[in-house]
Length: 121
Image (cartoon, rainbow, N blue to C red; front, side, top):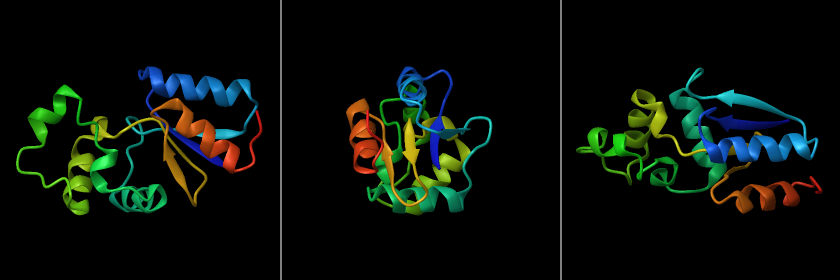
């Protein structure tokens, strides 16, 4: 089952949510602001994404400038600690099937992921 790691107020998250709904692709929503990801879940997510830790941080978010002082973005545990304290800095949307994951920015990355997983348009 697909999980959409989602933030209701994010237009990109809403776009992917709408696409999944329109395509009748079954999924569950994880609003990480209501139910933050644990450190263990963030570690697993990074493994699934196969990206450096810095890729899951919203570096363009104004709050990032306030909170990242002294953080080594190449250090996975420091990034996870930051996201544990400030979950709003998590990149979104993220789509995972439990084995692999993709950040849905740009949107086409999520569509490619779905096609590779056998979800046809």
